[in-house]
Image (cartoon, rainbow, N blue to C red; front, side, top):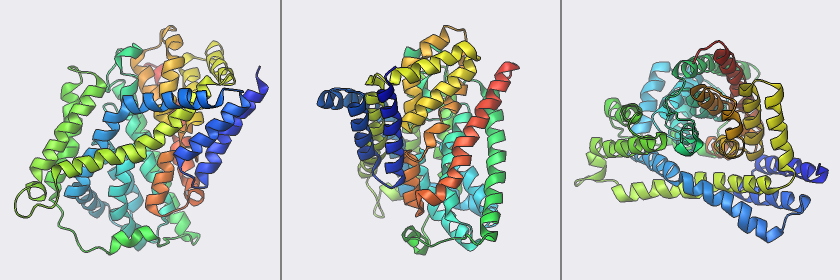
Amino acid sequence: MNTIGIIGLLLAISCLIVLSYKGVNAFIASLIASVVVIITNALPFWETLAGSYATGFKNFAGNYFLLFGLAAAYGEFLKVTGSAESVAKVLFKIFGVKWAPLGALLITLLMAMGGVSAFVIVFAVYPVAAPLFRKANITKNLLPGIVLCASVTLCLCLPGNPTSTNALLARPEYGLGVNAFSAPVMGIIACVAGTVIAGVYVTWQARRQTALGVGYVVSGTDALETEDEKDLPPFWSSIIPLLIVVLVMILLKDRMGATDSILTSLCVAIVASVVLNPKVFFGASKKESILKTFTAGMWSSCTSALLLTGGVMGFAGVVQAAPGFQYFVDFAMGLSNTFNPYVSASVAVNVVAGITGTALGGLQIFADSMLPAYLAQGVNPEAFHRLLTIACCGLDTLPHCSTFILMCSVCGVTAKDSYKHVFPLTVIMPIFLTILCICMIMVGII
């Protein structure tokens, strides 16, 4: 056993977590952590960075460039037209100030199911949630956990969610033979249970924190609140693009693969967003260019989400090349000899997701290195797909998660103050839902 190599891997992960927690750019942190792995595992320095790191980055960016890019472009169209804010404002009026945390949770889930990525949702939800939190004197430290829980944990439970994570195991090369709508009953039950628990938690914590004297603190990002009332599009036309994403995916689920159906639905929704908002893009009162809006969205995905997550995947590539990583693989595979394959697979994917700090990255590494062994054990493909899609978003939200860092920045809160709410909502919650799903699989609820 390469003891130094194993210690080096744990040290590198700790380094990645600490640096990210202190606000260091996740891409730079991934490079520093990779150097720690290279040195402690005696890997060739430049060859590993130019090989394993670059290959991990390249493979991830190549496989998910269109998914990230189109999702970000779609989000940009919703932002430019005001559709996202219009939907959020109407729904927040329904919930009111008192139930603002619960409203933020459900609105985020709706937008996530409508194809808006977690990286984009926070920019739409924050400007309308912040004034309500301020009026009710509710701490903003809850917002990163609320948005992450709804846009990742709860969204991944639902069958047909238009995320790259849901599409990954449905890719033909993995041989599961499933689509994005696998295990619908199990997924819906898990989502309902998670929504109820999360709703109770955020409502309780909002009141508890206020009672303890921890209320709303104004930050620089609150400049958005002082803007004049915007000329937003009507609710009915604003929600149509969100609904189109889900409906098109349902229509195409038996006609093309999961990834292709998501990409197609996003393209149709973008076209619908343009058609429904002609004053924004055409005529004398034109405010924006279609090409400029599309470019801004695509480019933002390259410079933020894709770069940050790709950097972490580059680190994961270095980890996989390290001799010490085999210990973790053997440990994870050894679980299958002791535990039920659904239990051991859930633990294994969580361990890898925790190492990489990304649910998608952890699931991809699991699929590439361990999935064939589990398929040979005769697991139910649909149940396995939905279970792992939920399980992978457990330990991924440790403090080095790039999405968490971004949301703290947008909401104007510190990682230290907000993580005490992020942990129960996005680490404990998915683990609980994973256990719930395993129980359902055991009794045949799929």
